[in-house]
Image (cartoon, rainbow, N blue to C red; front, side, top):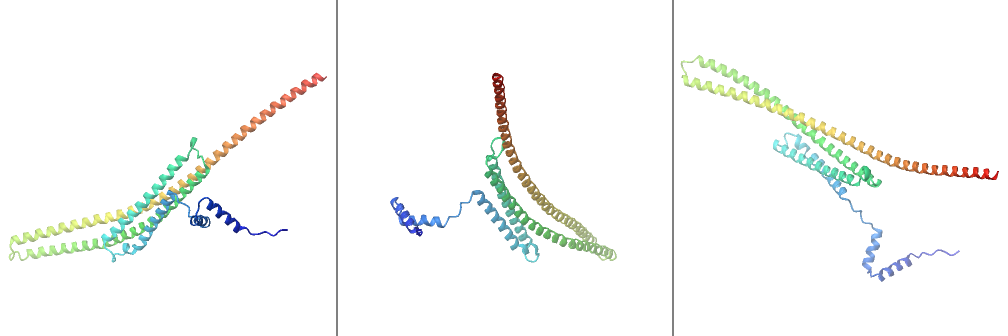
Length: 309
């Protein structure tokens, strides 16, 4: 038995000769051979690029929250203006990420509408699987954004609670100050009445006007503090409602994904039902043909037997 011989080098020489005959030089031939060994990365679709960009934006938002977490919650590190600036930047981040997710959803809906054929049935199974995969990608991005948004809602609730805790002692202190000033003014009135002979009438009237203005200003400040406290409480409640609404939106997204899976499964079942109906029609046609053939043979046999007898 002849021993096998490695002819790889002969094959390479034949390839080089063929390439040279076609006008390829050594550099171009080397690049072609290298392309067979080192494959280029596959070209990403616009949807994949947009999804990666959205994921990077959400990651930057998460990193921003981790970086400024202490600055936002610690009252001694930053001022109210700086905390408002951080909150505005986070809100802009969230709005941008949500807009990018909405763009992805719209592209999926447009692709789904274009892929539907007659009677609203998807023409290709591979396209339906791709659309389902894209819906899953959008759902994952929505869940990721919801997780980061929940962290920011918790930080904002902590800030508003601290603001309420700081407002309540000020309110009590203002009430005590108001009570002391009232007692002081009453005692001053008594003292003013006692040495009435030593003080002039215009000075007493001016002092009374100043006391009235002080009381009115204290009442106005107290009402303003009550309004601020009520506003802060409402903002905390609105933050809690926003968090609750985001949770319900995520649950609805999961339910929509489940409904989409059921719709895909129902479409497959309809396609299988159409195939079964086609097969049943074919079987019915073949059985009808067989019955006619059987009746024809039976009739011919009876006629032949009658003629033979």
